[in-house]
Length: 229
Image 1 (cartoon, helix red, strand yellow):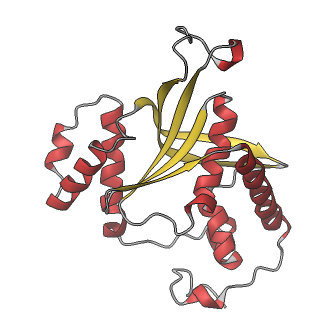
Image 2 (image 1 turned 90 degrees about the vertical axis):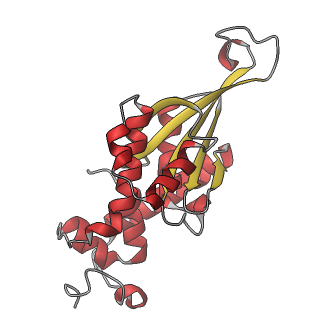
């Protein structure tokens, strides 16, 4: 079984028929390149920068607006944390289903809660030193209206939690580059249970759905409207 991505889950929730066209029939509808160009530039630039590549040529290709967005990201407190990985694919199993996605970046810093915690100490061996991990997601547009329960938030946190298996803290950070703001969501044991239940429920719904009806409320703005009948 293929892994369910946040976009797949979101598409199904909006309209099962759109999900059918896009992910079952694999019908691709071209989108205007300009619609994604700004976001793609910033994401690529961030990835190269974090990996230590020379980005001077890329910087010269940015517009004035894109330069300002890049400066906002470069000076962001979370983007300045210690680098772990970027543009990273990860997945995890919830119930009978696989979920997964591609992280913009994973960062961390070290929190020393006691001067007695020696080098290399951890909660596992009785120390009080724990890592704080941050999943970063850069937004050149707008962040989700309900970020705590956006499928991207839930999928990435569940997957990273399974990967890290850490005694430290895991947080999801939406970086709103347009307004130069952050939205931070902390992953708690309660959210682990809640997110797992929600993700299992919608994956089950997708796997059991046979009659794919369209959602008339969203048809007007759907790129698949010409295929729908």
